[in-house]
Amino acid sequence: MSTTQPVNFQKAVPEILQALGQVHPVIDTHGLDRTIHHLVQLRASQINGCAFCIKMHLREAREDGETEARLDRLIVWDQVSDFTPRERAALSWTEAMTSIDRRTDFPGLRAQLREHFDDAQIGALTATVAMINLWNRIQISAH
Image (tube, rainbow, N blue to C red):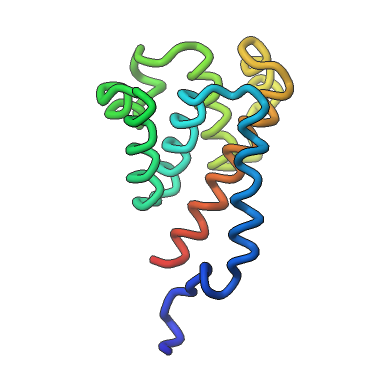
């Protein structure tokens, strides 16, 4: 085996991947709607440049009824009127949690979130963002 060959995580550490996958059904019990779920996962994957995850999350969003127009404009969500204030708050949080910048106004972002989500939903949103960032990094490590 070449020293530069990607690690086959499914073969090397299947129990870790299985454990990570088990968190998603738990996150889903906290009231985060599927539209937000898809937008967040897709936006983080766009930021991280994970082609595999982008393709997968586009397919899943379409299967759940998301429109092509909104999916096409997600990359510029903050410059168009396609997204609701609730979705915009979630996308702002996603970007802040994906591209960590110590100058980010986290209290201001939390205030925006609390206009639209309860604390359990914010926790589920944060966990969703954290998990997609983790999955993106695992997938990108194989590039």
